[in-house]
Image (cartoon, rainbow, N blue to C red; front, side, top):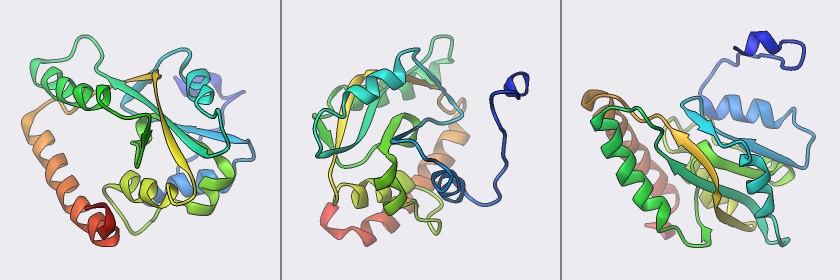
Length: 178
């Protein structure tokens, strides 16, 4: 699909992990804000506008939005989605970390913090904890994305195992957040 827009979009393939790719992009961005989403997400038409509304004071250096579950998924994916949505519905106005699936950052701050390329899983948690040392991440529930969750139990449990290992590594770095 993107190749149909090659007159307006340049495609790049970056070798390395997700942090490497995100840092590569941050090195090339010259806009005031950068918005992130993941390949397994669909964003609402007004998504960026809603995220930008959250930058309503100078202490806000990032905004993050709501993650919902799209229609047409299997029962397992819907169950994952219900659990995830229940967490997003309880978020406070300001949060300590946010997933890259729905995140907008002040580019200059993101370029200073950068994603840690030595972390394979849980990069958002580490990044968020370091980011909030410089300012606030504001939760903007009106900025919506829909996330396609793992479709089978094996893929889901592998993801959870990897996240558990990543969480231990992250909390060892940020013991004050345990």
